[in-house]
Amino acid sequence: MILQSLNILNYRNIRETSLEFSPKLNCFVGLNGQGKTNVLDAIYLLSFAKSAFASQDSLNITHGEQMAMVQGVYITPPDLPTGEENTTISCGLRKGVKKQFRRDKKDYPRLIDHIGLIPLVMISPSDQQLIDEGSDERRRFMDVVISQLDRKYLDCLTTYNALLKQRNALLKQYGDAPNPPDDLLEVLEWQMVEPAEYIYKARTEFFEAFQLFFERVYRQIAGLDNPENPDRYAIPENADNPGSPEIPVLRYVSQMQDRDLREAYARTRQRDLILGWTSQGIHKDDLDMRLGEWPLKQVGSQGQQRTFVLAMKLAQALYLSDKGTKDNVQRVKPILLLDDIFDRLDSERVERIVEMVQGDDFGQIFITDTDRQHLTDILKPNENAKIFHVENGTII
Image 1 (cartoon, rainbow, N blue to C red):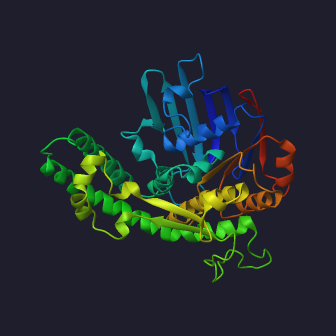
Image 2: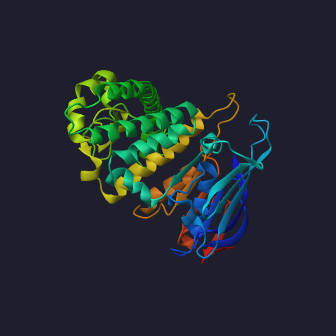
Image 3: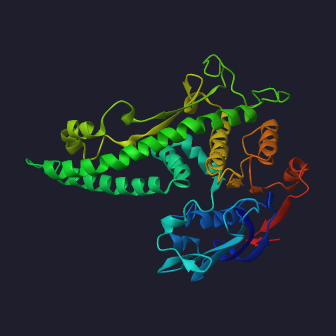
């Protein structure tokens, strides 16, 4: 779907604005702190029913105001057989009141039912957390991708996390007790196994396909393939050779790869009571990120780490596009938000990224940058790009 227009009222530092967009490339230029990222966050809100940055809805309301509203009109490409020409999504926020989220003036019974309608990928400096932070960030990356295509996955994830919370609470409560409730713990464990198995299967299938997109995107950004080669995305046979300092390696790691979860719960129950938390399960899954045989976090330069993360996020967009095909007619290309992504990258990598996202593999794109001339230079081939100037929450 393509975002045709956006109306914002009292969202963060944006008091009021109405914008019409290009179906391909849209750029927001302005100094830091002026509101460029807030525009992208408003677009993100309409896809995921929540902000990309604020955990509380009230924090998104302009200071001194009591309510905020974001509304977007989306058009469907004419050759995509969805039966709809356009869709209006709106989100109303009011302090002390549950947010109101609507599709064509109808409230959603559950916000979870909206996830996946408007596929979207956001790339921002905060994505460095995929490298710097713990495994929960990398699991969240997988969850966000898969949930946009698989409603059952999101339901299983919600169920598993609720059961995990209950088990951890019991472990803490009875950690020092002489007679812990083994029967109750066993019931919870049996209930956790079914959603865990579905989650593991979905993550495994996701990674097998995603890895190929990731490797080809990384190689293009890093310039590891000959641009004159018509098969420039091909991965050479020796791509896993650790002798190369910039061979990207990404692996999915899960305890369920080598053990039965039900038996693992029973075997480690006493240890878990001592620890006060559950040591086995899909909530321990991770993505192992390397350059050759070495951990990316330890050996990767800032540019290599940034390239690695960018390749993961751009591959996410390609994966959603590929797996979101409807009736084999046209790929459902997700909206792509690129927030200040050019920092810490050399000019050649920036040019390769821009060339890539302007191609047919990607859909509608929104970019922020502080330098208008920089954007003008790299967007010269695209005459349909729209550039907006942002200053103190005002967009022109």
